[in-house]
Length: 101
Image (cartoon, rainbow, N blue to C red; front, side):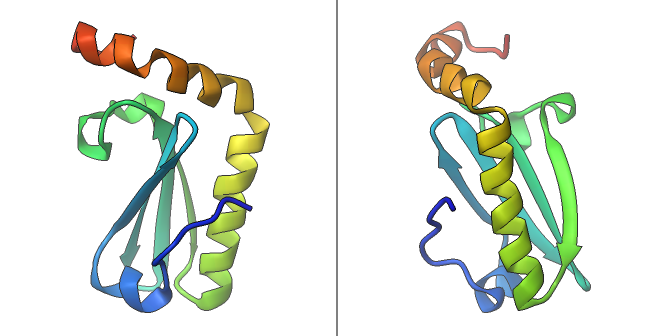
């Protein structure tokens, strides 16, 4: 599983959480009784990445739901590892171009 330092239900209740792993970024936000979890490619932040490049999955806002969301993030990385690794390689090129490919 991808290690995520500093994340807990208490933290997520107060504010969104984001991170990255080898070309894959993720963003988590709690809303009512749901944890919304997205994965998307580097190099842009969540707000600057187009919606069609984001994958969303919702989980219950519980300790188990948080664990499931982290397992899902890990599985998304493993399922599309070649894609994420290519995004990591291409991120500087994309930044210098100033747009998404």
